[in-house]
Length: 94
Figure 1: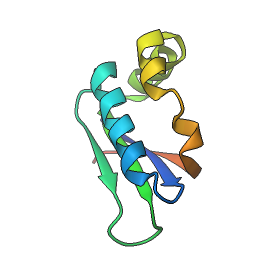
Figure 2: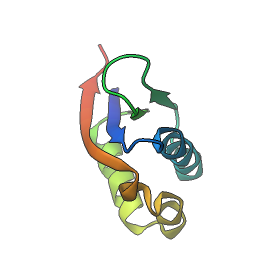
Figure 3: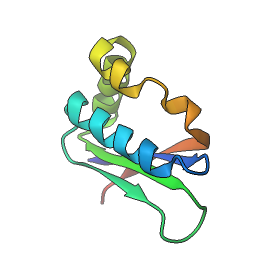
Figure 4: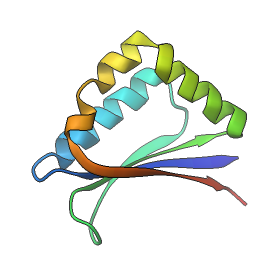
């Protein structure tokens, strides 16, 4: 089992909007176990979409779905305008 974390630092005033959009998109995409996290400490306006996949093949399938699923892409439209920087972590659950 792996955990995928998509981490963003939102532009000022955009953190809650980005978090809401991530939550709506993850629900529409059918992510199994996921959660959207916002900062209490650390960098301001940080938003994290964290979800579990069985393995890297599941992650790859999800990425292909993102590239081709028009309804999911519509839910994500404009999200790149809401953040300053971002990165992804993929961790193994032990």
